[in-house]
Image 1 (tube, rainbow, N blue to C red):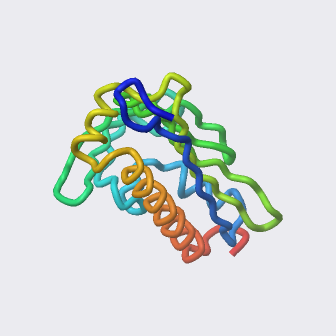
Image 2 (cartoon, rainbow, N blue to C red; image 1 turned 90 degrees about the horizontal axis):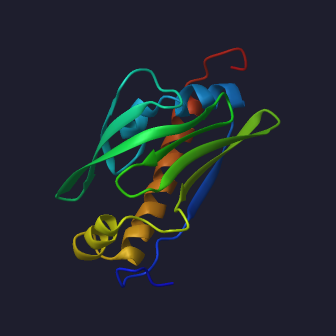
Length: 165
């Protein structure tokens, strides 16, 4: 589908992983969005205004190769041991982690949702002119989501803290 700018319309993206740990342990890790630079290949720094909870504003510093750029975001959902989500104010996308209990394991789902009106024009222009176009950019995002989930899984599974250890 084409956007108003002329490129492809951004798509919703999703990736998931099974983590060999209960929801409580996974939540301890993913609910602290300040730790995103430990997991995400693109995010380099998260500066949050106050504790992470619904309504918290964050400034993220991102990198792709030699390109660096800031994004502003706001936590839109902080449902204890279920879901944490934030909207990127610069492009209107919402990123989320949803925790689905599966016995003593947890399915962790990472999503990037695009509003029906699409992303902002400035975002579409920058993706098209600077970040290689929508298709390449989204392929890189999915690869990054997979890497992020793999790193979160490793972090949770190697920290056998808590009563289920």
